[in-house]
Image (cartoon, rainbow, N blue to C red; front, side):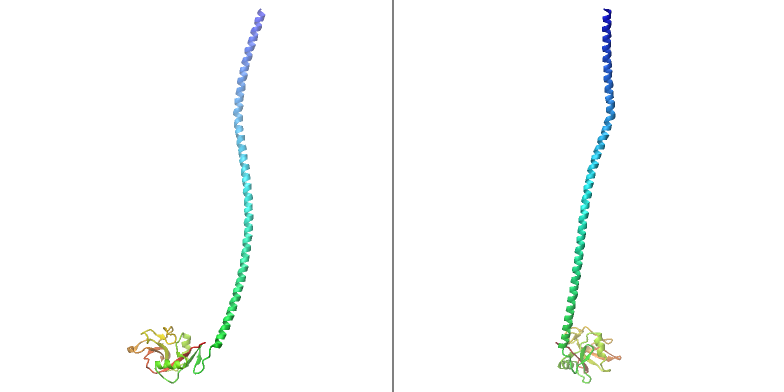
Length: 258
């Protein structure tokens, strides 16, 4: 009986001891899991971040590769376009050279035709005979003896198929002066009879462009001087305004007609 009680008591102690051990074991297991979780979870997070970065890098690498391919295609297209533009420019340059050659050829042909027409025109123009003589590029008659007033001089030149001279420039003036007698005055075809102070050419019918006066001229003495002469004064012939009724020599000009 005592032995049985002892055995039962021992069994009870063993059972209680086993429960305590089991409880302690569970507590240890929970502590281990928490500890491991605290260590492993951050590592898992780092791993996931690394994986995401790897995925992002792969995506960026793919985009970069596509961009490089696109860039290469664009470069090839631009290179092809440059070649086409260069060829077009060469073609335009060649065409331009051909056009310029054609223009030069046409200019040469036109010049030859103008020269031909000019020669034909010269042939058609009658060369004035006596009493006209060529002085410079024009033909003149210089009266050497008969002195008449300005109005008669205009009529005499008309009868001779010309008109009182109208000097156009200094070269013509210089050529005429070489043929004039010293101490003699000559009527020319300019007057202000139509309007005081406005000297008009009888040849052109408008205001004279070339005038070469003596000092102090034109001076309309007593309002009776309206016709222009070449007066020899101070050892030279220059223009002077004189009374139209004064008698003196005159110069006629022959205009070449077709």
